[in-house]
Image: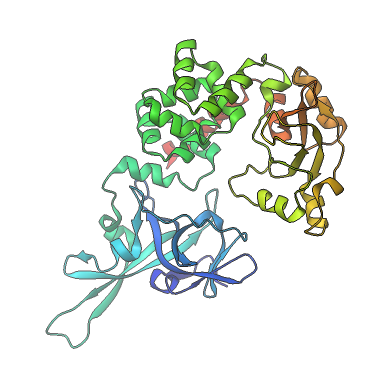
Length: 418
């Protein structure tokens, strides 16, 4: 196992296996994705390019549990098999840095070192340069500090590099950083972010700050970003828009999504209907435990949503057929794979969409629920309210703003003393 002070060379990493959480071989590392640091910060590793199942994929550094001479081991067994593509602001060590000329020398290798702290990561520490000459029988090598060759990693587009630097940070930390910038810089960085990342950041901001950040984005881009947001968070955002702007957005959305949003917006503020999300896992009573677990494993599912499966008669899109009950994730793990959901149902309390927020909180606390099903008078499932949504409402109305102001002040102080 490598110590925190040890160096590991990129060329060595690119010959290592990619391992799952249990140590099983699932691929091979081909390249390392890095992004230049700000000012005096070293270049940071964002992730790795690997070949798995004959596909070239990206493995985020945030998903790596350990990196040592045995391989790059993941924290989980899940693997995103979407094809890798280079994003603006990022560099590939093998493709973009290795063999690059620096004066009369050439880059032969890059040494990485692990740094802990609030944002632990691997950083470029040294660069190995080689020089060949017709007068020398063998090439010469020297190891230099990354500061001496910082231009090798300099971004071609600073804003794109800034967006790339934020890629692996928690959305709440990104929101804090963005909130500390002048509004025009915020919007420029937001425009450079990919849709999913921008959606995650918007969900961490107060609604009025969300509106300021997306001002100037065209409808096509807005819809792409809104497609990545949770329905309940999007409903909160649309609810703060002016009537004309909200109408334009709804008109330009996918018809089915627009209908869902109109339904959510129709419920009075402070009710279960306004708080719920329709994006829950809903399956037939005849579905097997194995099939249900396949839905739970979907990495696109929010953690609180994937904690349980709701069982109804068809149709299985809210509003569903008659609601039957719920099966929690732990129960699914304990049952044989071919067991049908109808044979392992739990009958927990449900709530109507007109119930007020306070009573929703009391219901969840009373029965120690992770989520509660929202059903109409005909016993059709409309959606669910998860405990994280309730926690959000239990805090003071401006808690996000208070957090941002406090953390932004701390960030500004840190910049001033650095």
